[in-house]
Length: 233
Figure 1 (cartoon, rainbow, N blue to C red):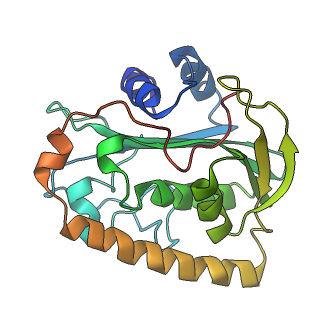
Figure 2 (spheres, rainbow, N blue to C red):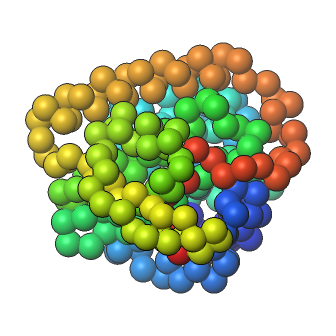
């Protein structure tokens, strides 16, 4: 994510969350890249060449440019300038690192692109970046009512370790605190390799059914996505 992305990120943020961050919060986060890491996912034309290894397969920290994913532009992130034609922001994700912990602050996918595994793909990218930065654990907060998000995080090895009371300011809902297993654990890494393989297959199927009209379809206000995480107090 770059400063130039922030206004469009703000639009997606407001469509995705009931208590959106102000734009100033993202600009402040971007001033400290040594601590914070934010990704932007844009839908781009299918003729773009692959640029990065596949995070879906765990071989790259910032992109999942599998050949079959190119119609959704998953090979381009914040390092790439948005096209003049206006490739829309599909979603974004972020985390901060401190000591041995990588804390997921947000994951969002705009409404027209949901249900295709893209939020999970961003989660995979955050795992890779946390690993690259030497984090031992990953953590996050999630609404206690958000069972679908909790199921996704459990799929990736997270478990509930506590609760923050009245954490969400929009409705005073509690948040579960979830921690991953140790990122260096061999058994855990083997389990995640299986999860990544299933994700890659799902993304392939999503692209097979991709319609260019999807990228042009206006996004209507929608309920929070099922992977809504912390950073919303």
